[in-house]
Amino acid sequence: MSTILEPGQIEASASAPPFLNLPPKALFALRAARLEQLAPGHPLAEYIGLVAGLCRVQQQLLEQPPSTVSPDPERQRLCLEHGLPPLAADSLVREDLWLPWLDALLSGVATTTPAVRQAIGTLQDSHAGQRKVWALALLSGQYAGLPAALVPFLGAALQAAWSHWLMNVPNLALKPCDSLAQCPACGSPAMAGVIRHRGKFNGLRYLVCSLCACEWHVVRVKCIYCEQSKGLRYLSLGDDSHATGHAPLRAEICPGCNSYLKLLYLEEDAEAEALSADISSLALDIRLDQEGYLRQAPNLLLAPGGD
Image 1 (cartoon, rainbow, N blue to C red):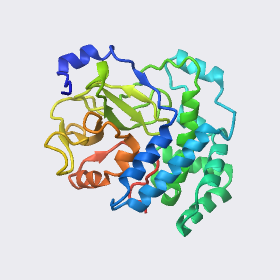
Image 2 (cartoon, rainbow, N blue to C red):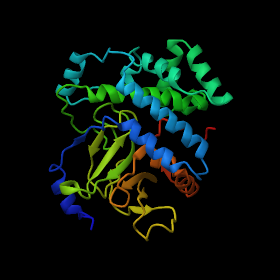
Image 3 (cartoon, rainbow, N blue to C red):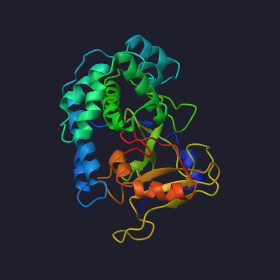
């Protein structure tokens, strides 16, 4: 049986579990495997296959980093000392440290279709300044500022670089940001939430960063955007393989700010993974969009409304 904490218990237990969970060393390999499992028979099978291939390349980059240069340790130390994200994306993306990761990723992608070859060629032919402009647009959610076809490749390179840096920050001790939805490691928004299912973490929620894959604890039954609890409801797509109320993926919908966040319930599917679950459940986003709800959680490998 899962443990669902009552509101009073939630607040009381907020300081009990570890605040931070680092991503596993096999992060991208696990994502790729899950995507490959979900692809057969899926309406987006071709795209899911493309993303799975990108995840395989991301894992290769983690295991064999294309650059040994890391963000300034002194700046990281000062950020940690003052409770700021040590890998702040809005500033680091303006520097050159992540560019070798993009070059390496583009070299490792299998150019199977003309569209993929064109997107890779566009990025390979672009100068550093243009790449940074596109990356800033992507990380700030300004998708009109870059061609939609570039998003998965640019996003994959950024994820690989930031995840590598996160796993190698010495003496990492992070504090919550001003916004519940903001990653304490890099300042990026959460992509989804995961409800844990084992031991003392049973029933606790961790948010997953859209960029570095850091996970941080946030109490349940609270909207991560407006921090209200009143009227929250949960919606999942109909699936005959799951009993009512037991879908492994559900959207937490807040009537206060008219937004929603996808949640993965690991008790219902222990192998569930945030990015792959998000991409494979776009039908849920379409339904919620039609009902007028706003998605604020980005997926850096997917351009909203893009091809």
